[in-house]
Length: 320
Ligand code: AN0
Ligand code: CP
Image (cartoon, rainbow, N blue to C red; front, side, top):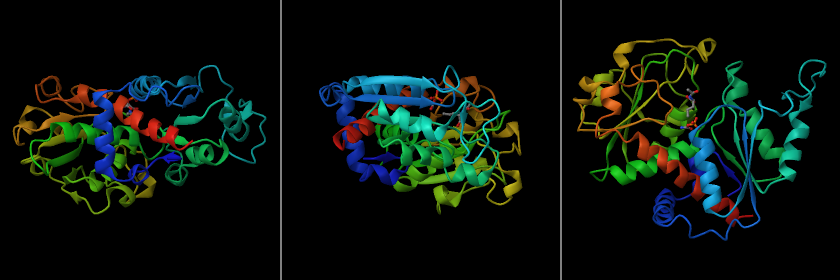
């Protein structure tokens, strides 16, 4: 595997899940695979889970790990070609990327949507430069439009907890004070569409996800109706994807607190499990009661981030 961005990059999903469960049963069985190989993790944005779980996954495979927080100690980077660099940016991404590539065998990059320009974000301008100029396999640790390590971990979690063959999985928008990216819901939708689940998305009008990811998944604008009979509730806020009104891209269109997932919402479900990628704002996205309830699986979900990262790194090591 040379790039990990979309669900298609992982190939057969059933096989990938089997591999994940097999790794989870004995996560140190491939310790010689990564000997003298270096995994570099580049963060343009904050992280708790991705940073820790990916390092752990690399160490399980016997790899060395280098982590760089670009905004803490590295030179300020220019990303646009053709700019006269007389401002505060000392180095261009076009040199920085191949230099980073010299010191490692595999690169992971986190670079969120900037919300300046929808096209730049949806064309993945930053990550595509890493693919083009690093000379190394690149995995996405949440880019402008996708968060595949999260979606893969979510799928593994659903496989582990499902109580029927084809569970009803509901992705619900929930309120948040700030503009958040669409990467998590985009990838979740893409992976759920590829998996054997009954997938429903619910959000207020104006929050329609890009068809590139949501495909022809069922969209139900009535949140309470969507929750009926659900086996898994996956909550997440996202800002306006700008599909119907490009001028609203990245905006907060609603802070409607009636969308907060509370006990009343959960009572409509088939005793559903509650999921969220974390970090989560309590009593905005979900109430204390729901996230602390026995059917909340946010912690096992986060634990599976180590496993999804390990499958991806293992496959990249195997193709070096
Ligand atoms: C990010 C987001 O919503 O994409 C990261 C989630 C994994 N969340 C925040 O910035 C709070
Ligand atoms: N879920 C997730 O990616 O968390 P972090 O932003 O803490 O890495």
